[in-house]
Image 1 (cartoon, one colour):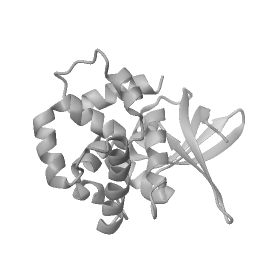
Image 2: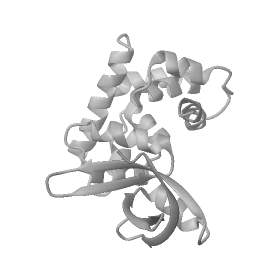
Image 3: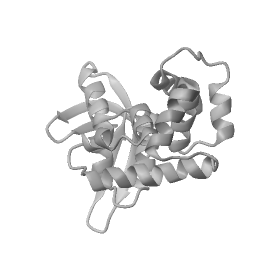
Length: 203
């Protein structure tokens, strides 16, 4: 398994969200998220970059997918674990939603936010919310994950609790989350708290 690639960018195609990175004379073609594409496009020529990768192996093809950071990669793996969600759909979702925004969309039942992704219809978006909420419910059995309950709960518990629920959606255990949130600035917005916690969890 190729965990990451470090090399120079030799080709970028914004229309197909692909990039080619030269690593010691070998060019690796990657399908990347919109965020990763923007990052690579902004890098100076001849400067080495690092992208984290996922290799999808099928009977008829082997394809590499690239991500700017481990958080995106981890979220991609969670998305493709959902029934009916393939790598291309996961890339499309992470092009319009950051890992933090996706976690918030799932925990609040915001199907419309997920449907913004190209090629992702309402049925798939609802399945993503349902299956990932099931993961949240298994981690917190006493939590009612209906949309109305999540909304009222979010208003009552505040940003820190919302961030904890969203991190559970992303597959982290309560122990890992509590450690990552220890000492964090509780006055930050929910997505900022999630982003800071993810940074700690990925170290």
